Length: 87
Image: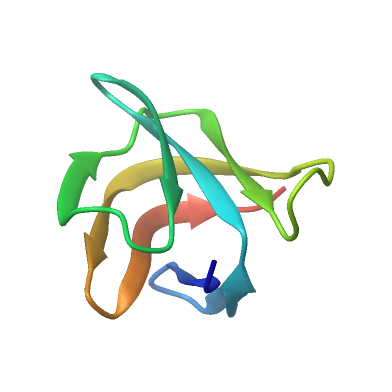
């Protein structure tokens, strides 16, 4: 399966822009696992939770704390716009 392009952005900087296997997004309505080919999708991020980035199948996730913002899945990949991201 093709990789999913992820962009994690805050007002201050581009935190991450790369192709990954899967991302688990903490939405206000629950967590969503997003992989390449996922249907168009948008959610408000759950404040104070973590985005889990799986770089390859079966790998341990890299967890990135996020506050505020939203995530959108489109034909271009997954874009997460957060007020704050990282430690």
